Image 1 (cartoon, rainbow, N blue to C red):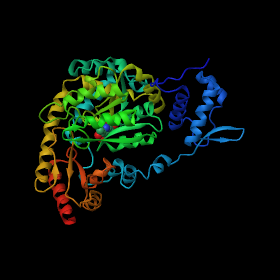
Image 2 (cartoon, protein in one colour; image 1 turned 180 degrees about the vertical axis):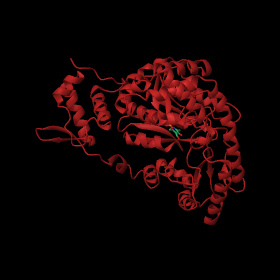
Image 3 (cartoon, rainbow, N blue to C red; image 1 turned 90 degrees about the vertical axis):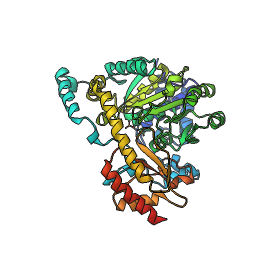
Image 4 (tube, rainbow, N blue to C red; image 1 turned 45 degrees about the vertical axis):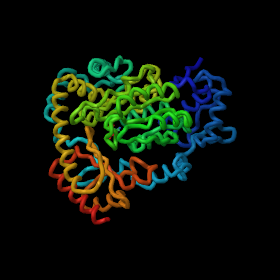
Length: 474
Ligand SMILES: Cc1ncc(COP(=O)(O)O)c(C=O)c1O
């Protein structure tokens, strides 16, 4: 008898699970364009399901355009199709998005005054100390470079993260509930591939992290937006959307939200898991800058309030701990693990062991938190310089309490996409608001400024250029 399909979502019918099985593998390139797919008989034997189930799955994929049929020959993978984008092009949310650069494109612009990269200035990081750790590490594990990590991630690192988060932040998880990824970006992608199938709804904040929207859309999801303001979420709106749209998951960045910097209040953090349970919606909590705060520690993650296991929590140590190692982790209840691990193995068969062990060494050393504390002070100073420059304008923003970005609103009539073109001629880069908020026409007069990459002098000079250019446009 063949193997059974490992699915994380038992609510799917069997043929839908076969559809999911095939879509995930086509996406991962296991079969490429115009390549013949397994016959109905062989797939039914492989998966241990009836032939009619596989036939139904192929019919469904044919209707969706993922596969095509050659007479008497079988099913073939359809060529890559911009259909998911074009189909939705009359949706204002999507057409606005199509007309603007993606975050990746904006961030690849070379500029002397760099406010588009939400990254830490490498000069603020303990590079020399990492060099020492690296040498020690290779002495300690002489065969390290000759070994693969397990797919789920190095057990020693997973155990350390689980016990650290349990004792320090009340996570109550074990090493089995941790999956190491290459950055939060991969974590979002793995979750999307594991849980979202074409046609599903995905709830996202408005505005939100642009690449996450791209990942979910690429997976064939339809995005549904919920507002985020300085008060946090509108839980009535979220409940209505969960009831009406039945989203598969809610992707959120509730702590130092990207791009707005907003922290969702504790009361809402407590209520969200209850809503998620009531409406069968998973919460994907993306936490990429948790330790970068200026005065008060942010509220505990939503994951810690979830008693029913609906939350998948992404903690990234990539941005501010050791960026070059790209270490992040997904923490979730065991039922999600088989699906996530299957996708992770298709993606890269496990994150590099060298990166994980080096990160572990730093994570275990007292230097890490000492350094993070100094980093917070340095970043706060840069944020204050940027804010001082902004105070010379009539623009609107909220002073960030942590994180790496300020979300700024310019007066009526301004277009930050056009402003970016002007600024690039003067070597100043930032991210226009539409990258984070394709559905709101008002987003075209907003922009995100990152204050953690440029140093103080660059911030003074770059901001004065930006402000002058904006004034000339009014
Ligand atoms: C909200 C959010 N999620 C994920 C990422 C990707 O982070 P990583 O560098 O860990 O892949 C970023 C990076 O800017 C981010 O802001």
